[in-house]
Figure 1 (tube, rainbow, N blue to C red):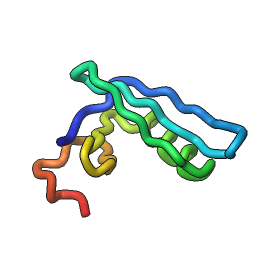
Figure 2: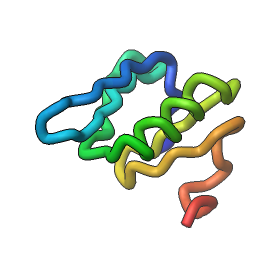
Figure 3: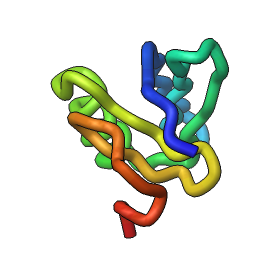
Figure 4: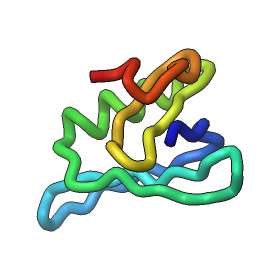
Amino acid sequence: MWKKVDNYVLNWHSQPRRGSIHLRFEDGSDGVIDHLTSADLFALGTMLREEPGVWYHTLRGDIAAHSKPEHDEDID
């Protein structure tokens, strides 16, 4: 199910050198994307900062920017 990201927190853990992103969705629920490399954390952080809307698929962990996909099958 796609949920719109309302807020987020970027975290970098020096040991074991991995990042995570804690998400707050428009409906008040939460999610976490973890085990990110520094490059992944940078790229996703940039998307969250610069895109007007970011959507997260709570079952697959997919991310879409700008507008909500019409169907679950829209993203491979």
